[in-house]
Length: 373
Ligand code: SMG
Ligand code: MG
Image (cartoon, rainbow, N blue to C red; front, side):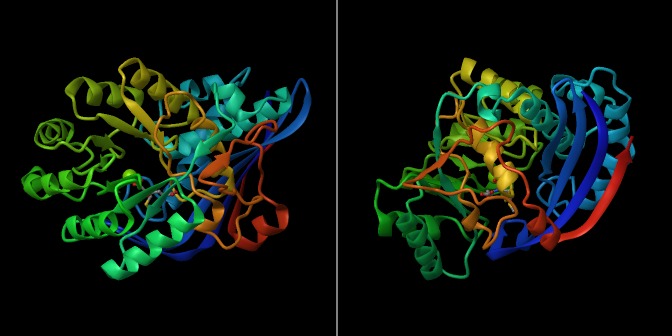
């Protein structure tokens, strides 16, 4: 294909309620979308990608304004210069730029969306999905009180979510988990996410979580602490799942061989794209390591693409793939719905959803016309 135009859209979307993690509180999602116009042998198509970098570099080093800059100055010029552009080679064309996996992932997603729209193939079919719906888990932020936590969890269970993930931080761990287990019983699929807030010295506290039959504990220690995660794994019964630490298939291979991860949270943005995400899925599956699809508070665009990824056979645990309504009163695409604990995988060509023009305009704070042929 030949790229004929590239536009970046920076959006500011209010969240239905503040989302607090061990690293901060979000009130809005500062989303970044990549729109690529392309000429293919089957005509003109538009492809959309979503960059999952957050407003501030607190979850990972990337942040929205930096992603706009690196995409505009280095990533787009590199793909424009490529001959015979196909999605499978985007990663290769961008390999000289160090880091910035979330920005690269968004460019690759937009090219892949365009390519699949032209080919008439859905994201799920292309990636190798084997399910029509995927189980929908919900991520519950840190609340002001145990009482409020129980109320919020009850609401999500009543809606039908298949799994609850509680965000934890030092001082907010054993008690909320105990309360939720006690109130809702042993059948609730329950897990926790620390977003790297602990150190190995906290292992006595973390070991107390073994009493609550959690599916996993996600990213207890810092991003670079692979060896320490392996040591912690020997001290806990609760399986350790890595999120922030796994930034590529190489780091997934390191984590698996070190015994640092019994489970991996796969987020396409964090690892540089959906194609690298599939490689991690394949590697983990070959090692008998479970994976599940993480979430980055995506709009309907990224949410739909994540559901497609989660339909691959190695995604054996419910993902952080909730309904649009979990975060947004109004999404910029047709909203993603959760029905009886499942989200349907879109089957129309490409990602299957695109921003609705008037909503895109409503929530857009800036537009960057990066390229026009
Ligand atoms: O999209 O459902 C979602 C959010 C899931 O908790 C979630 N994501 O570390 O896994 C994680 C966090 C990263 C974003 S926190 C603002
Ligand atoms: Mg996480």
